[in-house]
Length: 591
View 1 (cartoon, one colour):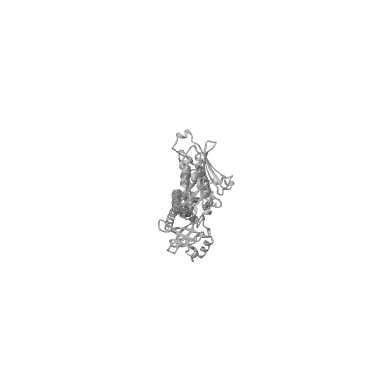
View 2 (cartoon, helix red, strand yellow):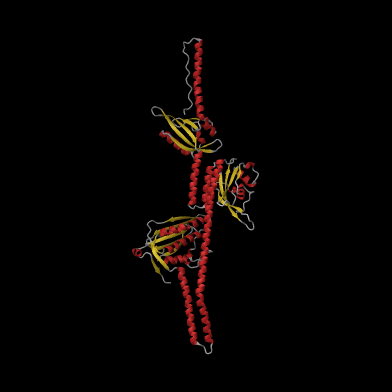
């Protein structure tokens, strides 16, 4: 659109005019000539101001010479203050630098272009606009001026951001990410969708305290990336009390609590006073319900201005709480499944121990009973008058026989425990380690361990029993995870790496940044029944070393020299052509 037109020049009457009527006609014509451009200009401005968008023009060098009234009404900036480069004060600080670079490129190239940026409304709210600019050229191709229009694309932009945020969240959930990062990402998405809003999500755990029949909700920490900590309940883990804050009320009632203006609210005096001191004047707290209809969390949005949600905002809140429900239910189901797995593993161990105890009792009972009987018989024979020496000697021989039988039972149980029979096959240590890691990912995430796998390319294969070697890898990773359980002052890192050394051996290393061990105890670590864990049996490393040594390898431990923690490493001989000829061969070792 053209800028304001200069007033046209007025023609004067000819010098020789002497008629009064002629003078009058000339004067009338002159006034008509003056009013005509004024009417045209006013009509043009009215037309531009009626356009449903912001219209502007600029000089060839980018100096803005005109903006329509709609732009001024939206931004609250006077037109006289916006001309030149004053209009840039309405840009969002994050968008202004890139827009300036882009506008400079357009001026240099002389090509039409468009850019998306946020403009501040008169009330401080930012909205997305599509800014288009086209040049007007003369017959020679030189740019006379630039014309532009800004179109509001806030709704489209929000829809795109919401869709992208949903995809990212669902990807995190499907990928097994921990619950806290997922909830933090959801809070960021909510805050981007509600201009100026601060989002937090707390977890709600329903307990059934005896003898109460009704469940009592307890608020637990979730995510609150930008909300002041003194406004987020749940740090103490006490039962939720509806009189404390709107979040607790929503948890107790399982109903949405909308407070449009905290200045006129009489409930939650302490919490309300703190919120107002932070400049927050409205709160919308919405329950997150699980698939069984119970409350599993609360999504809270704090606003700096008094306001109540519109229909579109209520729909958006429902969409966000649904995402939160999916994330929380998935995390709790995984936790429950992990607990069930742990219980089943414990029961299996107990059952195995019970079966082993019963076997020992059954197998050893008979020879022990024979030994006692033979000893009693031997005593009677020797106590007779005269003593029955021949019978006593035979009874003593039977006692020795029964003692050997009992020893054989113990040896067979030892062979069963150490699994003397192994199946030799070609094993890819990289692939074997990846399978173990895939099985332990849930356990590592629950313990807050960050895994760093570093597998060597073209790693030679080894000859061995795949199951037993994976048992060693499993034990080393679990030991490293447990060694970091007490670490709270730093993040927990676990590195699993492989490489081939200079002695034609394949090595695997498990490195943690836990508390490590006393270098003087390095040999005792692999001694049976020696443990540094209160609940450990002390047989894991002993069995692991015996497995590696049966594969003609070695297993050892070192304290990390360049940081906290320890490293456990085993090395196995690489496969040879003779080994390839004997793949999948079962060997039997003697005790």
